[in-house]
Length: 356
Image (cartoon, rainbow, N blue to C red):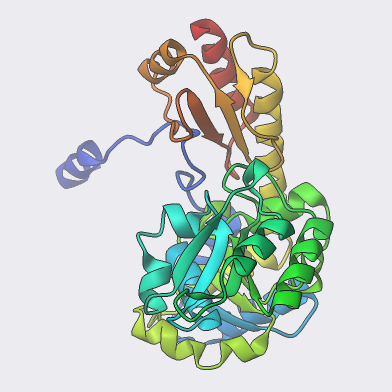
């Protein structure tokens, strides 16, 4: 190693130990990394006119066992916001759970990209909305002075780590269909939902009435990139123009789409999600054996939500653990990732046991 190499090495920040704050903390899974390397070999047509993007779209059609229109964007905010904008006009409204990411964490992007569509919030236990709540809000007003409901957005897995079953989604679809509403799914952790349910992806998407799915890749081992999958292909009309206008058309699109090929072709997307879920189940089981803890929500995907004493939270952070506490006083969220190891879970549980 020469002097300049040593200087660069010294300047490089040390890697964090595996943490539980977010599944966005994890690096690239091997399958995504390898595909990126392969896509980097030589020249390739730009703006999505490449074999990688075509192959990724075809693989998604195979996964869902249906013909659908597929687009790739940089992140979940763009995916959700542009997908919802394709469902609505500016004078419409979108119904979603009060904890939904499109309400709490998109900085108004769904309203912005739809030129003002209003987001209406629904309560619901375990982070889920009920058909009766949809009907209540839609029936609340129908006059010209109120934004006309046009779309329902569900999150699967939800923001609190629970999962909608096929029957729950079909019940929502039945209500939305009867009311003339479109159904959007925020699937930032869609892979975790499928792994949790052990069902075919089609069973909780187009067979359950979902018009458009935003399928997350970043939280499941990719560096960047989400797919927008239109099962209702009429809604995809001119969507490529929406993407371009919003700055979501990647010139070197193959670097968004190639990782999808990597994780889809041999089922790695589902294996990684199942592993993350299993690590969360391990942590959940360990927490239930500790005193002064209270589960906040049912653990069904890769997140564990628990109430801890304030002193324990501070002590845990003093030991170097990173996690979020945005679910009320004492509420903590621990997220597991594709690369979380049993020993990581056990180390966290051991420190929790010590501080409690």
